[in-house]
Length: 362
Image (cartoon, rainbow, N blue to C red):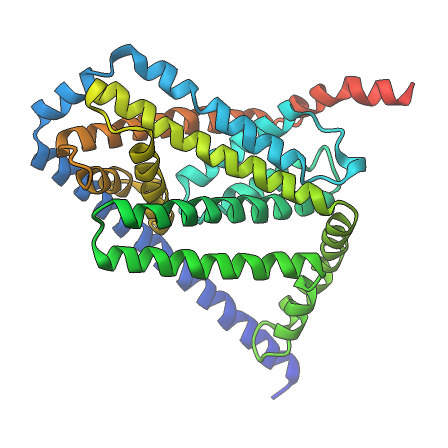
């Protein structure tokens, strides 16, 4: 049989398998979405709609200032991302990066892509402002910095939580193993970036008997990215540390929102600062474990009911807390999606940099 026929047949079979995998993925996402919706409906029925409404009404108009608190951690995370650009590329303003990050975060919230879909969007939106390779390098470095800061935040918080919250032993073991494995993987990923090993890894994978051509092409495309990454870590080793610290403080600021919302719901009977931060850490860890559920429907509310019940808070208040967090997520996701729609019109970001370009050219 001619070699061309064999290659064509293999390619056709690979494409058919890829389409089948897409259909299976869509089916699984649909099942998870329905399962999350059923879980949410069951919790509302279990708590009782009257008690739930009464708990939510306590917050009142204070829900608007609560939503706006998100600006603080968002600004810190944006400043951390700014530290991930090399010196010649730091002409981008914090406003531009904030807008792009807002759009990417919205995509992460509404898609079950383990926060990867939003990173692709960031690269695309940086396209009119930077060469593609430089944009990819800044996003990859920031992703590593964000993940490392979040993992350390969760690790410190969970170590403290295990000694102060009556969490089930199985849950403690699962959380501990998850954090340890993620931390080891992140350190390895950063080492690969530092020494420019990503393209070499893909090249060695191309020797395996599947998708060899695609992997070889990917290896060639990753080589310029490796060069950018090595250049950043070599020339600016302390800047990555600054990005890490800003992200870490950003996660603490996000945890402060838990304390504020509990105060709004329970008043003087709310848990103290330390207990609220423990709740925030455990909830954040559980949210990461449920990333595969579309929009975290049902799991977002369920994890909060579960964790708050361990500190003696009723299910009605716990579910109200979860629904307030859901509204907060929907509010910022809506703004982020609107921002994304504006950003895709290239004139939006192009106008914001045109005065700077003209100023530099004079």
